[in-house]
Length: 140
Image (cartoon, rainbow, N blue to C red; front, top):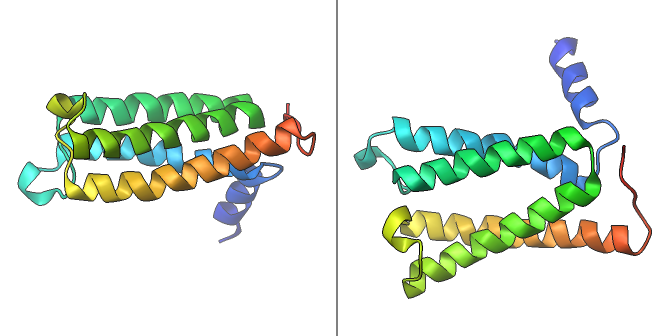
């Protein structure tokens, strides 16, 4: 039983809030994109559009790459930026802006984008504020 705990501790040891958030969030993005291709549309609450799934896989991969740099600045920037993208997606879905014609968002997508978007903007913004005020430095 101690092996999984020690592995988790090593992964999360000496990580900032933004790095920990991204270590959890990036694989979830990739899994979400893969699930969109695997689950039949009638069983999914979320959009199953191929461009939308590729978007999740692409940004999840970028997020995982950022975690490998061990940079709080990059993790905070990614979280803030992706949070803003999530919030834009809600606006685009509601108002009918691009890429609505490719992503085919559902109400469930909108709700998750609001919740995750605000959380990432707050967490990413907090990390950047700490860095700019000299409270945190890169973990490299």
